[in-house]
Length: 159
Image (cartoon, rainbow, N blue to C red; front, side):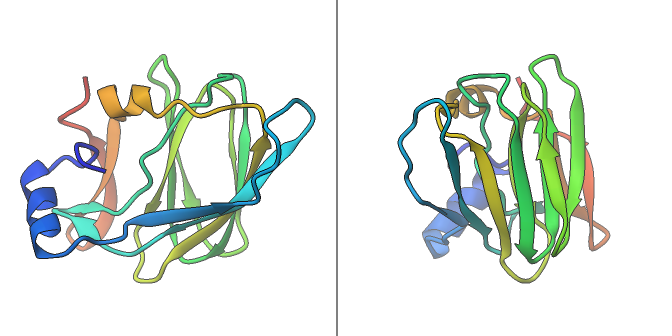
């Protein structure tokens, strides 16, 4: 997750103090071929780096037109989505709510609560993952805490 947060100094201090588990995912591991569905759970733990909430790295799918569905099992937070053209959307996660991520959108889960954000996800198994674009460019928006509330702001590191 190095380089994913706006405040590199706060990230380095966090690692120096403790090596926190920010998120994890568990997948069944079905064959990555047409016709199969990949699914699993994602858990984003509560916490912040600086004023930015813990989140997943985020990704596009290698087959760019691939959509994905997330269903919130527990916790609260947001799904941040962004198209290659710069269109951004954010949807709230609360228990029992599903979020549809359209094809062509990078996406990341963000935990803004005090409990783990747990989601179930499903997408076409042969879609692949493109993490490199996000590692290089980041997202145009971030979710940070201001006045003890989550707000969506421009990412000063976006390239």
